[in-house]
Amino acid sequence: MILCRRLASRVQYPSSPIPSTRTGITVEVTAARAGWRYLHFAVRQVVPGKPWTHNTGTQECCLVLLAGCCRVTYPSGKSGSPVTLTLGPRLSVFADYPHALYLPPRTAFSVTADVRTQLADGRAPSRPRTRLAPRLIRPEDCGFEIRGGGNATRQIVDIIPPDFPADRLLVCEVLTPAGNWSSYPPHKHDTDRPPGEVKLEEIYYYRFDHPDAYGFQRLYDRRTDRTVTVGHGDVVLVRSGYHPFVTAYGYNAYYLNVLAGTRRSMAASDDPRYAAFRAWPPPDARVPLVAPPVNRSSREAPRQTVD
Image 1 (tube, rainbow, N blue to C red):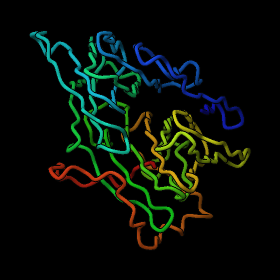
Image 2 (image 1 turned 60 degrees about the vertical axis):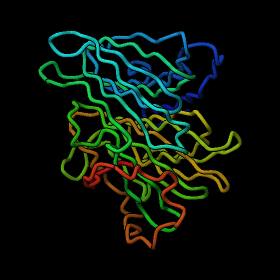
Image 3 (image 1 turned 30 degrees about the vertical axis):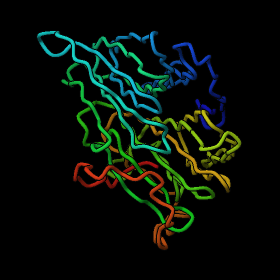
Image 4 (image 1 turned 90 degrees about the vertical axis):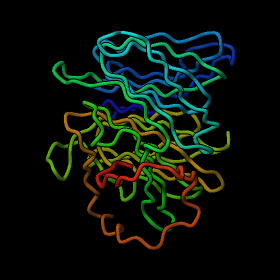
């Protein structure tokens, strides 16, 4: 729903529904359109009998299943023999943990849907000397963290965290109960000063569990301060400044974060005026909104996560 080329200039990117019988794009933001160096983002619908065929070119790609079930076929290794992997089923982002697939540069692939399927497609250019391989990300491979407290409690589901073998891409899902705050305390990642903060381009892709639901995202720095309304299917692009979010009372919110920069880190700086709120009260008992798989891989969730 919003793009910020600079914080003072924003353009909204609402989702455009397409017929349920057609394979195509519902929303897309290219790096060129955003005035960015790295991130490309789209949401695609794939329907039975009408596959989507593509090549990653010079970019790495992460396909995140939002709803449905599909099969992705790509050539494997030196033999070039085809590999077919299944993503799903996933009823919705509010019902099930994510299925995803990481694809490195120069990978030709085809997506065939078993039912009407929606995929988020995040990409970033990959450095030529980086050796990467396709990798299926199952629900049990994804992270689980309850973050915050009180009415700033939310659920973090890491898909491509900093320790994942990728070049630039970082991906996570955030589920926020009705009336709660996320990305709080307000934080930013627009300055390269590791380890405390790194510069990242970031996308928020929103879904809500009811068509009438909405939320507000504030984007501000020392020069500009604006608040925008977000609804189901909207995309917010954040390049600079702090960017907290709150969902209105009554309906739960979801957003997919896709980030890219020059470092494999999600380090961010809090607005110092609100940083003390990290002394959280007990968490909201409604979280988790989506239970993690019982056989989830045992690994610690990354501590430096943008949410």
